[in-house]
Length: 209
Image (cartoon, rainbow, N blue to C red; front, side, top):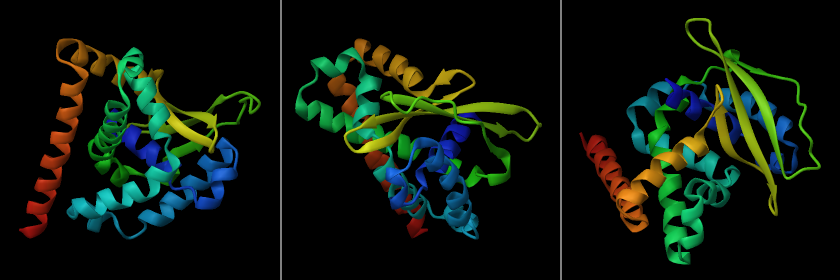
């Protein structure tokens, strides 16, 4: 459930229009909520049946608005410093593709009426800030979902999502750090690349049925 919630909130943010890139973080999220609802209108059944179309939709709206490099750097932590340029580039791509695949079906769970934006209290003079929201679950529980934004050379972009105090970046970093220590960075990168091929093959086979 939490994975789907992460996906839903990532995509809520991502559907801001091109003009929103110059906007402050709160306005990006606010606009995104409305635009995601419009973008999903009438397409849920289609996307549930067509994995390729689902990936295409998510990639088109997430890639330009998500700071892949900064997120990948934070996920790798100290391993980023030891990686060469080729390893870094391959990991950035593999990490993003993994995010895209793992949470693709979360977009189907989106419900605009369940998301509440809280008053923004961040400091935009700093390099990072947080936009806070709550999401109502089926059982009536309200879950806190916070977006981490970083102001880099290309403006404000989202790099992390924290659900009930659990950071996606920190959680992923702990998992991959353990895997890298037990194998190697190259082995992790190769696994991510293999998984991309497998998923693409599965999607192609499903489309041909």
